[in-house]
Image 1 (cartoon, rainbow, N blue to C red):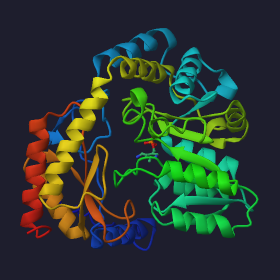
Image 2 (cartoon, protein in one colour):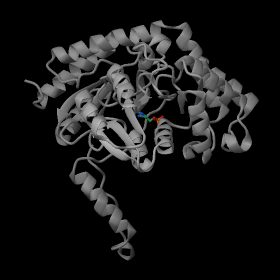
Image 3 (tube, protein in one colour):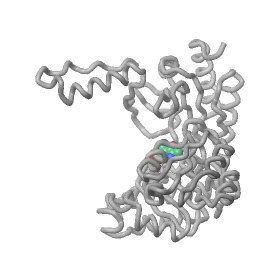
Image 4 (cartoon, rainbow, N blue to C red):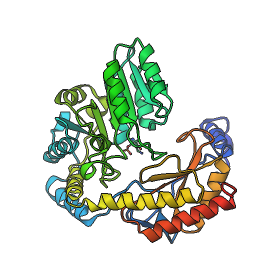
Length: 405
Ligand code: PMP
């Protein structure tokens, strides 16, 4: 879609704020990095209504199809009637409501930790955890492909940043060896959000033990996807109890909204006392917590959803790889198709849109320059036929634009 040209700037506003905005936006347009919202109607199902048409949704992190599950909507409705709409203030101020408490207990049990504390979003959790634990004189070791919220947490902390090459354990060890920092934290996504590959958590846990570093794992895309009943990659790899800080989100597989940190009782007390993203913000609405509690019940009672998600994802990945496409090492329901430059990626996304697929061109700064991609995601509520159709359309569009021959 061509970026819209704005109305002319009124004469009295030139050289002013509006001029500045326009200059910056012109730069974004010139780089082919224009972003805009695409209106959709209805829930985040396998298909969505957009621009008066039905499109196959290939961009949602609603992996298990729980956003829109009527049982969750019912639990939220019930909680709205009993607990109302808002939480009134931060929990330090207006009290910790029953549903906050209950959800935290459920999340701690789910992740196999002593305790857990809720954050309002995954972005806030990452920024809030890292910036409260570390300061100047400390060092944070962060994978180069970690999520932006981890990067921002590192920046805000003021700690020395050691950005190691993606999943390169030799580079991580080299950096751990030479640091003189007081406290060391290794932080990584469990599932990398734009690549769909998984972190080498066993090696990271081992290095942390050898070099006296703390560990933090962001399970945003691993929760509900890996491990027993979706407990996450830490559980899947048998590392429960070996990672100091487990962070997870509630707005992806769990179909709700919010996030949490899980770990020792002391860690959670530390965050309650020191994390500004918890102290200075109004807590999650209780009904949102009720919905996530119901989602956790569903995860426990319907393990087939996760099995189906993996079956569908494996088949879909195979189709794309067989067509000669580069899926960035994905082994998860996040299946990116690497294209390269912005213009070609945009053209392919536009073709797919025209053919009835909702998929997005991912460009810098979300991914490194020159590695633009179409990031697609599989949901347990897709059908094999849906995904076969999507893989065929992607392959054809990539051929048309010279990505494959
Ligand atoms: N971590 C990762 C790895 C993510 O992909 C995201 C969201 N895309 C977040 C954290 C932020 O979570 P939230 O959307 O709840 O703010």
